Image (cartoon, rainbow, N blue to C red; front, side, top):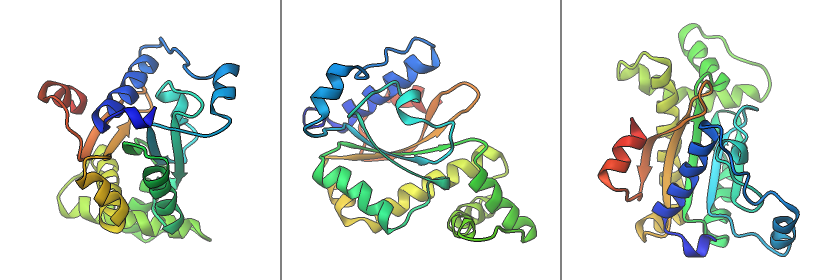
Length: 215
């Protein structure tokens, strides 16, 4: 599938699935025994989805997709490390995915913990502290810009993650520059299941579609 889709087509396919999910009319595509047999020899996903590990963000459910459709990487707060970058680059350079999605969401515990750490110095033990430290730059940037709403801090972390991907991955940056891949940041709303466009790199959409998606 990925070999035959442009980045914009892959984005539309993903968002169509989210539309079905939010309208409570899912099709549950590619979830049967025939699909299982079809993808057993190899995978051809149309998108890399890098999301938060939150249990309420099950990618194939909220985008109404199935086996072999999405190459999923998840960490708390969608924080980046070398292993994550390598996994995303694998999806782009080896699997040929035309779309990379950074998926954040409201009520994110990692963002809330980082905000608390900045506000009153509280932090966590163990490696959870590493997650908080990686989210902290987004909180500081939002504070410096005078952004005060919860959604502002979620958007700041999504934007920061997209920027880091583009800055740190030569493979991804070159794929975007060549028009082979686009990177988008989406914010997911837990209450209604919608995924809204926050930022993008290399995505070409009709003006009306882009406006409706971002609203």
